[in-house]
Image (tube, rainbow, N blue to C red; front, side):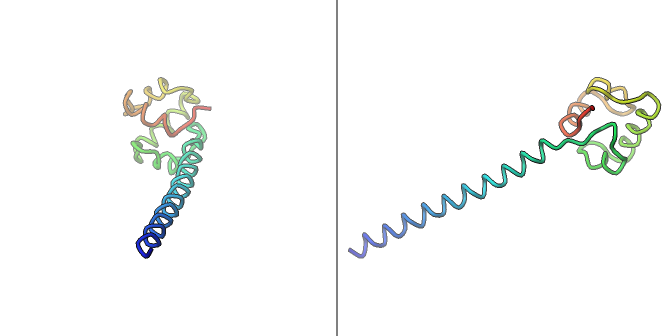
Amino acid sequence: MKQLIAAMSMAAMVLFANYALANTNNQEMTKATAQANTKLRLNQASVEQLTAVPGLGQVKAQAVIDHIAEHGAIKSEAELTKVKGIGEKLAARVAQYVSFD
């Protein structure tokens, strides 16, 4: 009888732990999804905001700002490659975090 009670207690703890972990993962996924859906507007961004984008440091962020000032808005990933120091690979990486509107 003691073994049955112990086994049932263990089963209940395992089920509760799984439920708690499932809720935690769900909340983390919701936060990650929200962050992924909120992209930085490239053409309105400041140098400080652009430096937060993976792959863009201070120099390349300033190059983006200068390019926009000289040539107008960047409307696509392909146009982003026209910025000095930004090639296709970096443009593809940056495009994940920015919008071109």
